[in-house]
Length: 419
Image (tube, rainbow, N blue to C red; front, side, top):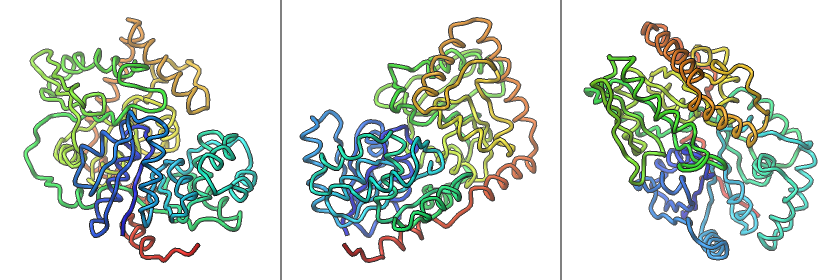
């Protein structure tokens, strides 16, 4: 079976989940197509796919032709939060599975019934016509529309997922919704050597970073704030002589080493399984609160400390997990500037976080407060006993539990499709 696979080009979360879904499907031909940071991550994990098509830099016509050709020759399609790929698959009349780790996050400005009516009336002769038909939907609403149009909807469990799944099911006709547990690289997590000697004293994982607003060279105040803070981290915490700072901003020739007070921080982009090995063996772990990295950590039995939010989805995640040890202990920008306005919107909320990171980096007093409050968070984290950390892992595991993703995908791909 030939499976065309793609992921939303928004940080490393979606594409790392795609890699996790793809790896166990090695008896099939797995074809990746995508651009931007999704393509960067796929290239770092070439063993997860049998063929890769990077559409970065192509004209819209060339990109569209490539996608149409790949879909025409496919048997199945798997999309991780890429609404366009689902829509193209529907027009190409290919069975498509929509995989989503943020199912309860998407904000709707109109009733579900209205979105369903648009999906029911969707013209399926050409992609341009279908795309125009849904043009009035917001980006979040288009993701929900993609779920309604998909053959199967696979959603990672999280607070609010049950309620949204019930809302979609109440509409009547629609996809079969499968609620899973962690969408992570099960094979890699199982095979990782947890007893190996750690190469670093502290792991800091900031994920892919790049999305619809954030970039490595634009709207990058968060990364610039980290560059200011890392030397102070080395000065404030002599126990962390060897720090590994990993993420998208340090790939593609951007690797560097920061030295201060006799310590060093290696800034690198790791492959998925290299990161899993580091997370399994490094005693202390700071983490941008992305769900995939969090799921990987708790599957490894490691409780990380959340660092400050990059974008609005991180705010959503931390709010939803406030009742857990992970949620209570994590760092937040509101600790530094409590009154900074944060719009309840994906784009505007992310823009506000960019502005806030810039204010803190440029203002000496705010930066001093940032440094102090985060040091307090780190100190509290380091005082947690092994049983306390284990309790934190277990409460997250119970809250986010669901069917294994590999068994769900095996069931889906073994289900015959009828037009």
